[in-house]
Every structure is written in structure tokens, then in C-alpha cells.
Image (cartoon, rainbow, N blue to C red; front, side, top):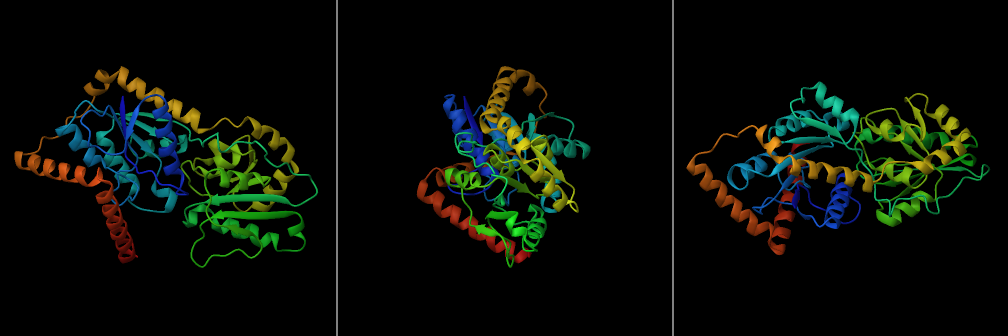
Length: 375
């Protein structure tokens, strides 16, 4: 079997989407499934669309590329669209419509949380087979081995980590906690560490900031703490709180988006204005949640197994899925000629390491300039 996942894999810290692609690729390889990240092979069995936006730096193909592949190269390839983004997450205006429009080429939809699935179904995405597969982190890295246990007397160490700097990541609440620690003798009760990138001109006065970490280095740093805190708003799934939970840290979390699905029973939710009240509540119940978190059920192995099962189901029932598929409008001979000209040129560029590197730098510069102009 050959699977194409429409995203690049980046080394180092890069965010949850990159970890998903990396973990799934390695898992499928362990099942003797070949994984590629483009549409330049004629024998692809399953295509996974991760982001249809042309402006996405990580995406390697869009839904339009998939439609062309199905029309001109291999009409029997089956398509999964993974939903991990929405307008509500970063206060954008066109993401949901792009994701829904891209769904024309999908045979199966997979969402990272029930919250996100419900959101899209309420906006009209109901004509395909929809399913939620919960996200998970690599258990060989993020686990509760050597996780610190609070001694009840020293300050309770709180930690969070983010790659992105969007306001909805929760920086307003992280600042509230920072200010609270600076009051009276609260620094003797709590300590707060933020790992990752900070927005421009944002700084903590009473908390520790560590630049982005990844892998074992990140896991070891998380395990030096006692409590994980996420204030992320409208997060479809997120990886940060999952990594913290897998490292054995009870979770204080904002009751928003898909995060409660991952944190319910493993910590305490707050609604916004009751942040400090809930902080003391989870401190008082720390040992109860420390015991509960030892049975945290979400990790990448479970997630990848579910994707593997869905891939096998698609292959087993391929005739059924193909019979339900909409037939795309055939292009003119001239359009077909243009397509193949671009197809083979792009294949030459992307399958050649040097040319691919040059192209990547060019696109990165173009997107950076474009974002500066739009601002």
C-alpha cells in the first residue's frame, strides 16, 4: 500500500500538525506501508489532505491538486480529509469555507475532536462519512517515567508550552497568572514556566520563559513540573496539553474548543474569570488528579492505529466508496496539456533535493512578503 500525506515534515519544534505527520508516517512505515508527501507517483492508494490552503507553508498539495490527480493520473486513489483547523481558532474569516469547499474531493472526513466535527456539521458539512479520531503524542517520548510529584510544601510548579503566538493561545490568562504570582507571597505557593514563542512585546515579570523545545528535551522539562496549564481558546485539539498529560501532569484547562474532550476527569476546567479559584481547587485536589492522570488514554500509537484501521477499511470497501464519488468535470485537451507540463516540471523540482531546497526558500520568502503586505 502507498499513502501520500499532504504535508512536509520539519525537524525541531514546529507545532502539533507536524508531529501528527511525523508520527503517522513512522507508524505506517512500521506496517510496511510506503509513505510519500506529494502526488507524483501513479500508484498511490490513499491520499490524506491535511490543509487545502495554497498559503500554507507546510502543505504539499491542495484539493485542486488531488482532483487533477484523480482526473488525469489515478482515479482509484481514495481520499481522506483531516480537519484540524477552523476560523474560531485564530479569529480568521475564510478557513471554514475553504475546508468545506475542499471536501468535494474527499471520500472520508476525520476530525481531531467531536467539537470540531460538530462545528463543521452545523455549517453544512454532512454529505460525507465523518469520524473523530482523538489526537495523541509519542508515548516513547512523552510518558510519566520520572515525572515529579509535588511534596505539598514547596511551590507548586506550573508549566505550559506553545509554538504559535496567536492571542487565542491564552496569553491574556498566562499574564493573569504571572501577575498573581507577583502579588503578596504567592511566589512561595506557585511557580510558572512558559516554554515556546512569545508574541512581540509580550513579557513575563514573575515567571520563567524557555525558548521552544521538542522531543525528549521538552518532555524532560515538562516532567520537572507538577501541573499543566492551558488557556488556549477554541483549540480544535492541540498537542501541548496532551504532551503534558502523558508526562503525568494534571491539567488546569480553559473550558473551550476540543480541549475538554482530552482533559475531562484528568484535571479542573475554568471558565475565565474563575481562573485563580480553580487554580487553588486543583492544588487542593492535586494528589487525586495525579493518580487519575496515570491512566491517561490518548497517545499517538492509539491514534495511528485508528488511522491505519480506517485506511484498511477504505481499501477493503474501495468499490463502495468509489461508487459514491462525484465525477469531476473533464478539462479540455489544452487544459490537460497544461496540467501535464506543470506536473512533470514540479516533479523534477520537488524530487531533486537541491531544486526543492531552492524552491522552498523562494516560497518561504514569497509568503513572508505577502503576509507583510496584507498586514
